[in-house]
Image 1 (tube, rainbow, N blue to C red):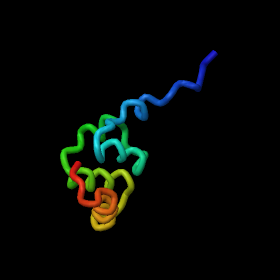
Image 2 (cartoon, rainbow, N blue to C red):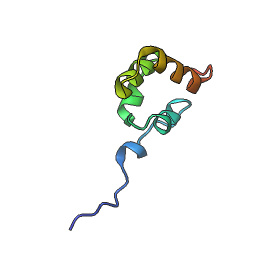
Image 3 (cartoon, helix red, strand yellow):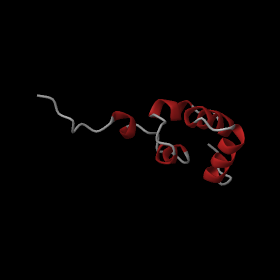
Length: 72
């Protein structure tokens, strides 16, 4: 008998500091480890570009709009 009611570990372990705490809400394909490993906004742009198969300009504009001048 297996139970599917266990909470997803990646959602429970998402870093909850500043912008990092909002990244998984915005881009659900990131797990907690990937979010914790982000170094700066350029790194976030590269990861968004890769995970969502966007061109660099679109990924950059999405991250810029999300960040609104905040630092990662």
